[in-house]
Length: 226
Image 1 (cartoon, rainbow, N blue to C red):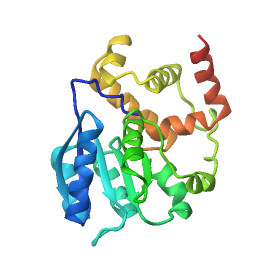
Image 2: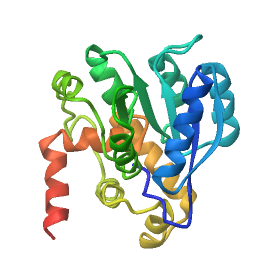
Image 3: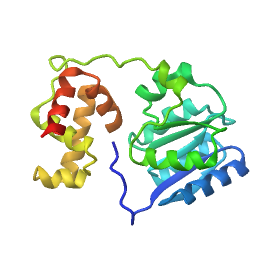
Image 4: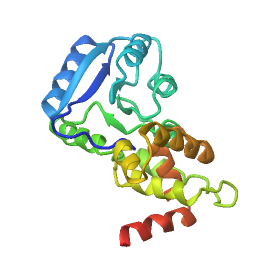
Protein backbone atom coordinates (compact mmCIF):
# COMPACT_ATOMS: atom_id res chain seq x y z
CA UNK A 1 0.00 0.00 0.00
CA UNK A 2 1.42 3.37 -0.94
CA UNK A 3 1.31 5.94 1.83
CA UNK A 4 -0.98 8.94 1.18
CA UNK A 5 1.01 11.82 -0.19
CA UNK A 6 1.46 14.94 1.94
CA UNK A 7 -0.41 18.10 0.83
CA UNK A 8 2.76 19.80 -0.44
CA UNK A 9 3.71 16.86 -2.67
CA UNK A 10 1.31 16.54 -5.64
CA UNK A 11 0.49 13.01 -6.77
CA UNK A 12 1.82 12.45 -10.28
CA UNK A 13 -0.47 10.88 -12.86
CA UNK A 14 -0.63 9.59 -16.44
CA UNK A 15 -3.90 9.45 -18.42
CA UNK A 16 -4.39 6.89 -21.22
CA UNK A 17 -7.44 7.32 -23.47
CA UNK A 18 -7.71 7.05 -27.24
CA UNK A 19 -10.22 9.91 -27.40
CA UNK A 20 -8.27 13.18 -27.02
CA UNK A 21 -11.34 15.05 -25.75
CA UNK A 22 -11.94 12.44 -23.05
CA UNK A 23 -8.25 12.42 -22.15
CA UNK A 24 -8.35 16.19 -21.78
CA UNK A 25 -11.53 16.06 -19.70
CA UNK A 26 -10.04 13.40 -17.44
CA UNK A 27 -6.89 15.43 -17.02
CA UNK A 28 -8.92 18.48 -16.04
CA UNK A 29 -11.04 16.45 -13.62
CA UNK A 30 -7.98 15.00 -11.90
CA UNK A 31 -6.26 18.35 -11.55
CA UNK A 32 -9.46 19.88 -10.15
CA UNK A 33 -9.80 17.06 -7.62
CA UNK A 34 -6.90 18.28 -5.53
CA UNK A 35 -3.18 17.77 -5.34
CA UNK A 36 -2.72 15.82 -8.58
CA UNK A 37 -0.35 16.77 -11.37
CA UNK A 38 -0.96 15.03 -14.70
CA UNK A 39 2.44 14.56 -16.31
CA UNK A 40 1.23 13.44 -19.74
CA UNK A 41 -1.55 11.76 -21.70
CA UNK A 42 -1.40 8.93 -24.25
CA UNK A 43 -3.84 7.67 -26.88
CA UNK A 44 -2.59 4.06 -27.08
CA UNK A 45 -1.60 1.48 -24.51
CA UNK A 46 1.93 1.18 -25.88
CA UNK A 47 2.48 4.93 -25.74
CA UNK A 48 1.14 4.89 -22.20
CA UNK A 49 3.58 2.16 -21.17
CA UNK A 50 6.47 4.21 -22.50
CA UNK A 51 5.32 7.24 -20.51
CA UNK A 52 4.92 5.15 -17.36
CA UNK A 53 8.42 3.73 -17.76
CA UNK A 54 9.79 7.23 -18.29
CA UNK A 55 7.92 9.14 -15.56
CA UNK A 56 7.04 6.46 -12.97
CA UNK A 57 3.77 8.15 -11.92
CA UNK A 58 1.94 7.31 -8.71
CA UNK A 59 -1.44 7.11 -10.46
CA UNK A 60 -2.49 5.81 -13.88
CA UNK A 61 -6.00 6.46 -15.20
CA UNK A 62 -6.87 4.46 -18.29
CA UNK A 63 -9.74 3.66 -20.61
CA UNK A 64 -10.71 -0.02 -20.75
CA UNK A 65 -11.06 -0.07 -24.53
CA UNK A 66 -7.95 1.10 -26.37
CA UNK A 67 -7.02 0.51 -30.03
CA UNK A 68 -4.05 -1.75 -29.25
CA UNK A 69 -4.69 -3.26 -25.81
CA UNK A 70 -7.61 -3.91 -23.48
CA UNK A 71 -7.51 -2.30 -20.06
CA UNK A 72 -6.74 -5.67 -18.49
CA UNK A 73 -3.86 -6.37 -20.88
CA UNK A 74 -2.48 -2.90 -20.27
CA UNK A 75 -2.78 -3.24 -16.49
CA UNK A 76 -0.84 -6.52 -16.65
CA UNK A 77 1.99 -4.78 -18.49
CA UNK A 78 1.88 -1.78 -16.15
CA UNK A 79 2.36 -4.14 -13.20
CA UNK A 80 5.54 -5.47 -14.80
CA UNK A 81 6.90 -1.92 -14.79
CA UNK A 82 5.59 -0.80 -11.40
CA UNK A 83 3.98 -3.09 -8.82
CA UNK A 84 2.85 -0.21 -6.60
CA UNK A 85 1.28 2.36 -8.94
CA UNK A 86 -2.41 2.97 -8.37
CA UNK A 87 -4.51 2.07 -11.43
CA UNK A 88 -7.98 3.49 -12.14
CA UNK A 89 -9.98 1.87 -14.93
CA UNK A 90 -12.75 3.81 -16.69
CA UNK A 91 -15.15 1.60 -18.61
CA UNK A 92 -18.50 1.46 -20.35
CA UNK A 93 -18.60 -2.34 -19.97
CA UNK A 94 -19.70 -4.69 -17.20
CA UNK A 95 -16.43 -6.22 -15.99
CA UNK A 96 -17.96 -8.34 -13.22
CA UNK A 97 -16.73 -11.58 -14.79
CA UNK A 98 -13.16 -10.28 -14.41
CA UNK A 99 -13.56 -9.36 -10.73
CA UNK A 100 -10.93 -11.74 -9.36
CA UNK A 101 -8.37 -10.77 -12.00
CA UNK A 102 -9.00 -7.05 -11.44
CA UNK A 103 -8.65 -7.18 -7.65
CA UNK A 104 -6.54 -10.17 -6.65
CA UNK A 105 -4.19 -10.53 -9.62
CA UNK A 106 -3.76 -6.95 -10.84
CA UNK A 107 -4.50 -4.94 -7.70
CA UNK A 108 -6.48 -2.34 -9.65
CA UNK A 109 -7.56 0.43 -7.26
CA UNK A 110 -10.81 1.47 -8.93
CA UNK A 111 -13.23 0.54 -11.68
CA UNK A 112 -15.41 3.51 -12.56
CA UNK A 113 -18.28 3.57 -15.02
CA UNK A 114 -18.09 6.25 -17.68
CA UNK A 115 -21.69 7.10 -16.75
CA UNK A 116 -20.65 8.15 -13.25
CA UNK A 117 -21.33 11.87 -12.68
CA UNK A 118 -18.20 14.00 -12.53
CA UNK A 119 -18.99 15.20 -9.00
CA UNK A 120 -19.01 11.61 -7.74
CA UNK A 121 -15.77 10.75 -9.55
CA UNK A 122 -14.15 13.71 -7.79
CA UNK A 123 -15.00 12.01 -4.48
CA UNK A 124 -13.77 8.61 -5.67
CA UNK A 125 -10.26 9.70 -6.68
CA UNK A 126 -9.20 10.83 -3.16
CA UNK A 127 -10.37 7.41 -1.89
CA UNK A 128 -7.99 5.77 -4.37
CA UNK A 129 -5.14 8.01 -3.22
CA UNK A 130 -5.79 6.82 0.34
CA UNK A 131 -5.58 3.19 -0.81
CA UNK A 132 -9.30 2.44 -0.75
CA UNK A 133 -10.85 0.09 -3.30
CA UNK A 134 -13.56 1.67 -5.44
CA UNK A 135 -15.67 -0.98 -7.17
CA UNK A 136 -19.20 -1.15 -8.58
CA UNK A 137 -21.47 -3.43 -6.54
CA UNK A 138 -21.98 -6.04 -9.32
CA UNK A 139 -18.22 -6.49 -9.58
CA UNK A 140 -17.81 -6.60 -5.80
CA UNK A 141 -20.48 -9.30 -5.55
CA UNK A 142 -18.54 -11.51 -7.98
CA UNK A 143 -15.34 -11.45 -5.95
CA UNK A 144 -14.32 -14.79 -4.47
CA UNK A 145 -12.56 -14.98 -1.14
CA UNK A 146 -8.81 -15.37 -1.77
CA UNK A 147 -7.31 -18.76 -1.11
CA UNK A 148 -6.14 -18.95 2.45
CA UNK A 149 -2.42 -19.02 3.12
CA UNK A 150 -1.28 -20.99 6.14
CA UNK A 151 1.39 -19.55 8.41
CA UNK A 152 2.95 -22.99 8.40
CA UNK A 153 3.07 -23.24 4.59
CA UNK A 154 4.41 -19.70 4.10
CA UNK A 155 5.90 -18.62 7.43
CA UNK A 156 6.28 -14.94 8.17
CA UNK A 157 8.76 -13.88 10.82
CA UNK A 158 7.87 -11.54 13.68
CA UNK A 159 9.77 -8.80 11.83
CA UNK A 160 7.76 -9.48 8.65
CA UNK A 161 4.52 -9.07 10.59
CA UNK A 162 5.78 -5.94 12.37
CA UNK A 163 6.66 -4.32 9.03
CA UNK A 164 3.30 -5.27 7.52
CA UNK A 165 1.54 -3.81 10.55
CA UNK A 166 3.27 -0.49 9.92
CA UNK A 167 2.48 -0.71 6.19
CA UNK A 168 -1.21 -1.26 7.03
CA UNK A 169 -1.16 2.02 8.97
CA UNK A 170 0.27 3.87 5.97
CA UNK A 171 3.75 4.36 7.46
CA UNK A 172 6.23 5.33 4.73
CA UNK A 173 9.27 3.21 3.90
CA UNK A 174 11.53 5.95 5.27
CA UNK A 175 9.64 6.05 8.57
CA UNK A 176 9.71 2.25 8.84
CA UNK A 177 13.48 2.35 8.31
CA UNK A 178 13.82 4.89 11.14
CA UNK A 179 11.68 2.81 13.50
CA UNK A 180 13.61 -0.43 12.97
CA UNK A 181 16.98 1.35 12.69
CA UNK A 182 17.89 0.35 9.16
CA UNK A 183 18.04 1.87 5.67
CA UNK A 184 15.23 2.55 3.20
CA UNK A 185 16.85 0.10 0.77
CA UNK A 186 16.81 -2.66 3.39
CA UNK A 187 13.10 -2.04 3.99
CA UNK A 188 12.43 -2.22 0.24
CA UNK A 189 14.32 -5.52 0.02
CA UNK A 190 12.55 -6.90 3.08
CA UNK A 191 9.15 -6.09 1.57
CA UNK A 192 10.11 -7.78 -1.68
CA UNK A 193 10.94 -10.94 0.28
CA UNK A 194 7.57 -10.74 2.03
CA UNK A 195 5.84 -10.45 -1.35
CA UNK A 196 7.70 -13.56 -2.53
CA UNK A 197 6.58 -15.51 0.54
CA UNK A 198 2.97 -14.52 -0.06
CA UNK A 199 3.10 -14.90 -3.84
CA UNK A 200 2.03 -11.30 -4.50
CA UNK A 201 3.46 -8.27 -6.30
CA UNK A 202 2.45 -5.25 -4.23
CA UNK A 203 1.66 -3.95 -0.75
CA UNK A 204 -2.06 -3.82 -1.48
CA UNK A 205 -2.09 -7.46 -2.57
CA UNK A 206 0.02 -8.48 0.44
CA UNK A 207 -2.37 -6.83 2.89
CA UNK A 208 -5.40 -8.27 1.11
CA UNK A 209 -3.88 -11.72 1.41
CA UNK A 210 -2.87 -11.60 5.07
CA UNK A 211 -6.17 -10.03 6.12
CA UNK A 212 -7.96 -12.86 4.31
CA UNK A 213 -6.32 -15.44 6.59
CA UNK A 214 -7.55 -15.70 10.18
CA UNK A 215 -4.10 -16.46 11.57
CA UNK A 216 -2.56 -13.38 9.95
CA UNK A 217 -5.55 -11.13 10.60
CA UNK A 218 -5.31 -11.78 14.34
CA UNK A 219 -1.99 -9.93 14.47
CA UNK A 220 -3.59 -6.88 12.90
CA UNK A 221 -6.57 -6.96 15.27
CA UNK A 222 -4.14 -7.04 18.18
CA UNK A 223 -2.26 -4.11 16.65
CA UNK A 224 -5.44 -2.04 16.32
CA UNK A 225 -6.50 -2.84 19.88
CA UNK A 226 -3.13 -1.95 21.41
